Amino acid sequence: MPQLRLFAELAGHDDRVWQVSWDKTGTRLATCSGDKSARVWAPISGSSFFEQPGAPAPPTDAESPTTTATWQCLDTIDNAHKRTVRSVCFAPTSSDTLATASFDGTTAIWAKEEDDEYECVATLEGHENEAKCVAWSPSGQLLATCGRDKSVWIWEASGEGDFDCISVLMEHTQDVKAVVWHPVHELLASFSYDDTIRLWKDDEDDWYSAAVLSGHTSTVWGGAFSADGTYLASVSDDRTVRVWAQEKREDAAQNDGFYYRPEVSYKCVTVVPDTVHSRAIYSVDWSAPVPGGASLGFVATGCGDNSVRVFRAQQGNGDSVDLELTAETKNAHGLSDINCVQWNPQHPRWLATAGDDKVVRIWYLDLD
Image: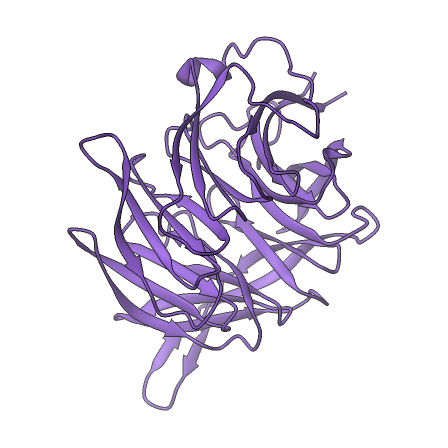
């Protein structure tokens, strides 16, 4: 029977861990925490860890967790933010560049210098209060941030560590919890306390709301695109997972009184009912396809009921996606909420999770 097997535990943060981010090679993991810091971790053996990880590692003492001997903390970044670091994200083009977003309202860009230490090369200011999430576009040229001030900001890299704000998007009516880019196109999704998802597109350097996805009945905490961008999964306080698929509409356009802008039309094609998760779902991620395992990959969720769940995603009838509950790990971080789940981009059966217990855990999805 398929199950998640624990192979590593990363301890070092002094407060809850909010988010994790794999680099493009899948061999480094960035984490961020309420302790105002970010950390970068790696398996000592590099990528070979994921091929020969050794024996599963039992959880360490919850009162005094320790880092598994097969992993190490490479860097601790704790000299820029004055409050909780809520979000961290590696640049898609370099393992030596990452971004952090903080409750102090700022976003910092970090790059490794000649001394092999991360240095803050840019500080992005503009949000009126807490910044909740930061995400790089696939090209690495754009950066999106969102915050409690109900706004989404889009920044453009102009070289030499400089970033210019090219758009401030204010259509959400409540906190914006998360932003995520389409894996292929410059299409941005945002998720909000106003129960909606918005999709944003660029029209000659003018970003606009191209679609509003409604269906959740409470806060939408986040989402993830499938590997090819065909589908978008979203999770909510309403305890459901929804999968959205783009509709092809040749006549879809938006008239703003001067000219037409193309819209993007998405429809909900699958709903995991609220009987599967017993509390709010805070995080979701969609893996790359796994040969012999799942034609559309696996969808993982992190929940306030302390559980991590994995769903096998297969093509259903028409545009629908079948999500079959494949593995469920209760108390994955003890009696703590699961704040983040993220699949490894190069080793799609490896999953990193973060929780309120101040710990990050590395799991392998065993399908046997």
